[in-house]
Image (cartoon, rainbow, N blue to C red; front, side, top):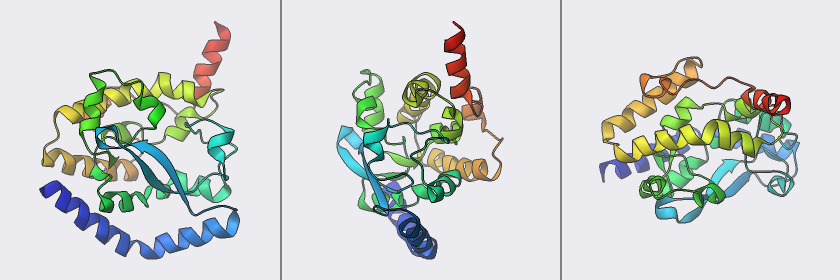
Length: 225
């Protein structure tokens, strides 16, 4: 109950305080590319119930029909403004609407696309018992997915090999232990990760660090086999 009250309070405050920035981004998107302001992809929510996640649109219209769900920094579907929004995570700000509506929380396992949720094992389904969030341990560990997947011939496959296994372990860790003080620590670590891009907290450092271009290295390794 306390967590939900905090979600409502801080998401409402965030939307009010950030409204000038949100309006500016809205104008830039509409002025530079055709299509809607928001991208509303389908994600698995709590208990696996699908919902539409709010993001500022960073790709060309019908991008989901052109390529896969994983996106590298060099994906040609990304718009000029979209590159900037993705770099600074500004495209994620509209998810405060999902938090206010109760579909998401400030902290919780990042909501996954439905095709990957269908692959969950019985153990991994524990992740679905928690309301998905805007940030979690996995987001801190892998703060720039686009850079990691850059150069990959198949970004979806690179995601499944390089990112998804550790992401699931970290999300399971949270699903099994998530008192309120852990949420507060994740929020603090998220802010520090943005300010200090090379820093990792101990909770995720033990899983190692993915380097930008790891997707390209994976493709080269496959070619030399």
